Length: 288
Image 1 (cartoon, one colour):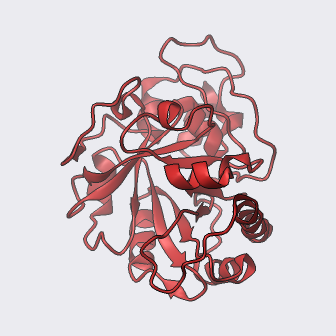
Image 2 (cartoon, rainbow, N blue to C red):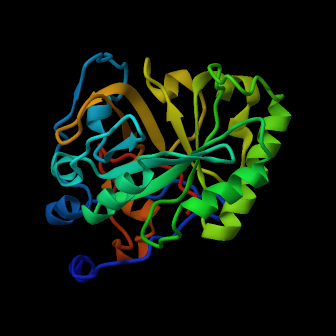
């Protein structure tokens, strides 16, 4: 356990990214409360203007909570958000081959100054090549060792006025793999893949290998909505309320416990080698 105290004094640790084959879930370990407080914090002080009574394990029973933010969140006090239970943030950076979210830099810098784990996501556009879109993302998103892996947000965009293309499942998976390949080559980490219920069903995007999935499921637990799917993040509402953030915000949880979060971030060497499993511990298959 002495290694944990060393860890608390180290700043700027490098978080290991994706790129390796997904591992089997690891044996849960129990962490000292002060370690959990350092990396996970206390209970989140969130609310929801349109709450759902989830069957099974509710979002509140997961220890690691986060948000995703874009231009719609025009006022964010990142320090307040962190003090009230936000552990991580995924921030919209780019869309297609020429759109940069106007709030990206402000959100990115604010989350970093607050010491919040943060990553950037790209909204995929089916009328530009994956290579072109990857280059645009790379052009606009800094390569920072301490950031979370990049995210590919791939879903149907029924409201797009300029692109009505709906590729087949095989085409969609192939384009996603091409985007992932180029992003991985630059950042050294395989992207997380965010998707929605209908896109997952229509394209079989879950067949992608070696990636962690971030699944949107606002009406039921992912185990019910995505039977058999392996996931790392769950977006459970778009009507969340967080102190420090004006207006609604998407709320998310990480699919494991505090120890799994450290492992996913790349802090495995600071964990005890062996420990008994706990009743409430949750495991998650990770790819980094």
